[in-house]
Image 1 (cartoon, helix red, strand yellow):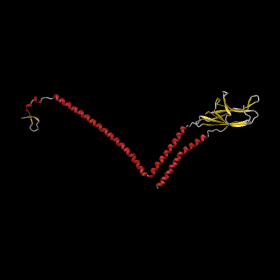
Image 2 (cartoon, one colour; image 1 turned 90 degrees about the vertical axis):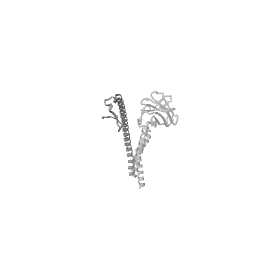
Image 3 (cartoon, rainbow, N blue to C red; image 1 turned 120 degrees about the horizontal axis):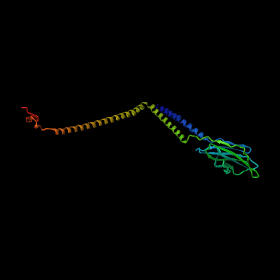
Image 4 (cartoon, rainbow, N blue to C red; image 1 turned 30 degrees about the vertical axis):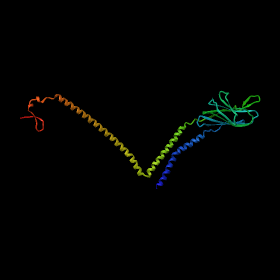
Length: 297
C-alpha cells in the first residue's frame, strides 16, 4: 500500500515539475530561434550583363556591431575592370572596419570622397572573378550601398558601367529591449516557482501518508507557541503590577513613619509636668499592674 502511494506521489511530483518548467523551456527555445534569426536574408545590389552582387549582415551577440558580407561576381571583359561599393548611413559618412576578402587582399578602403567611403578592388582585371568581402560597422539603423564597376579605357580614362544603378538601402530592425539580466530574472523566477511547486507536492504527500500524525504535529507546533506567548505576557504583566504595588506600599510606610516621628517630637515639645497639676498629690502607683492612678480615698 505504501509502495503504491510512493509511486503515485513520484509521478505527481514529476508531472508538476514538468508543467512548471514548460514555459521556461518554451522561452529558451524561442530565444535560440531568435538568435539564429539574426542573420538577414541577402539583398541584391545589382545583377546584369556585367556581373552581380548581393549583401547580408549578421548581428553580434552584444548587439553593438553588425558584420556585413558582400558576395560578388564579375565576367570576363576586353578592358580591365575594377569593382567596388560606396557606403554611407543616412547620408552620413560611415567608415567600415575590419575589411577582409576571400580571396584575400583584393579590396581596400578608399576615403577620398568626404561624403562616403568606398570599398574598392585594389587592381583592375580582365578575368572573370567571384568572391566575398567582409567588413564591420556599428549597430546602425540603415546602410546605403551603391555598386560601381569602373572600366579603364586605353587612354587611361575610366567609365562606371553601373552609374545608373540606384543605391540600395538595407534597414536594420531596432535592438531587442530585453536584456540578459531580465532573461536571468525570468529563469530564476521559473526555477523558484518549480521549487515551490515541489515543496507543495511534498507537503501534500506527508498529509496523504499519515493525515492524523500531520494534523497532530500541526496542532502541537502551533498551539503551544501561542499558549507560551500568552502565559509569558501574563506573567510579565503580573510581575509588573506586583512590583508597582510593593513600591507604593513602601512609600506609604515611609510617609507614615515620618508622620509618627514628627508627632512624637511635637508632643515632646508641648508636654507638661503632671506633678504640677491639681490633685497630683493623690496619684499613687497601682499595686496590681504598676500603673500610676488617682487615689480617690
